[in-house]
Image (cartoon, rainbow, N blue to C red; front, top):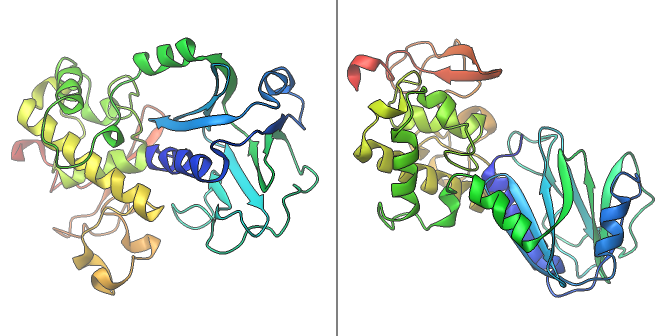
Length: 305
């Protein structure tokens, strides 16, 4: 499932290529026909993300809310003036990085005939975007969209890293500190914190040297705020790079001169049985609430807390 940094990149993409433009909206697949009819011919005013939810605000007070889920993805294309990512979402084709078009688009503002189940198609004068496989694709009022956000936990990307422990960081500390649930589950609970998925969960816990089994109530405010600030920094780097890279440049073959290959980008994620980059202990793997949890039994030992 795409994590929060990818959804924030999507919001940037929509702002860059569609904001202020009147869009033709359709549903080639047919499942979103009623919603598409409500949006067709309206201008896109804004795009924003909160956690794993994308909100596209249209004139008239309507919002297209999309949650990509495990299989959703947006594909983009257009003429020579249309630039940007060509695909963001699942399936991942290059490690954790979406496909990126750094040059001109697909050389035509006219979208190709739909291939597969295109849930929604947005077309402007110069380009287009196709949505496939999303778990949620619905039109809401601004009040309904705000109610969705109100049910979610704070988003680390909603504040700038380095701003300290005020505001959303304190709210995160309160939410995680009143639960006896293990940290490994709390970081995946979107009502505790929005946007963290399986990769960031494993990597953030390792970077903080926290036992995944430690209950939230045992974390304490100071460590909770530090965890929040590290999440904000790591996810902001994900927005910048288009990838989840959590290792220090000292672990990269070329150092900071070039971003690492996928196999050098993480400390523990998908490295079960391999030696920990810090201590040499074998990275462990366990099933946790239907997802795979990775950690170092030595670096993240409970007695070290």
